[in-house]
Length: 184
Image (cartoon, rainbow, N blue to C red; front, side, top):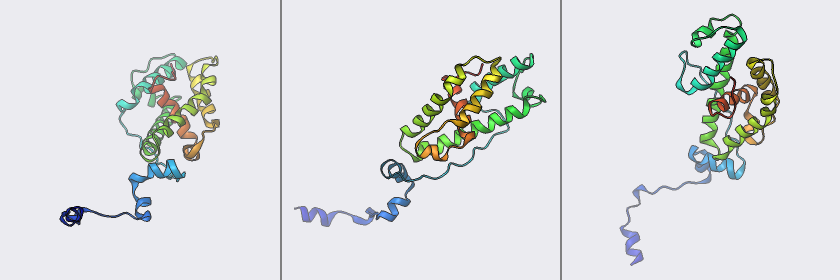
């Protein structure tokens, strides 16, 4: 009876995977990283769109307040800040960091076990929170102090190996978006 069932079965849709094909399969990468410490490689750089995105509205609105506090003027939107001689380049740098960190998070969310990105962000948070809480003359000094501190945070694991300073700084903006840090 078993032999008859086997003979009836249509094997046209059955395929086999050898170790070489398994290792090359992108869907297996997360398991290979988690179980065998495989290196998923570097995340691609982020692309900064010309127009503001909804994903950056929280940290950008706080940056507008930070720049306004320092310069004693209200910034209505990002184009006001970009045109400002003192804050324009600073703001551009923050957006680059944000989108590099966004691409980093997206890449490793899909290629590592689920908790790796959360652990990375927790390590960045733990490394900068004392600097964030320390008294500062104004919010821009706090932001700049946190950015300097973020560079020196030593993150662990495979993500720590691939997280450059701009990624750790950009992760701080993501922490602002999540409500774990505040710039203003």
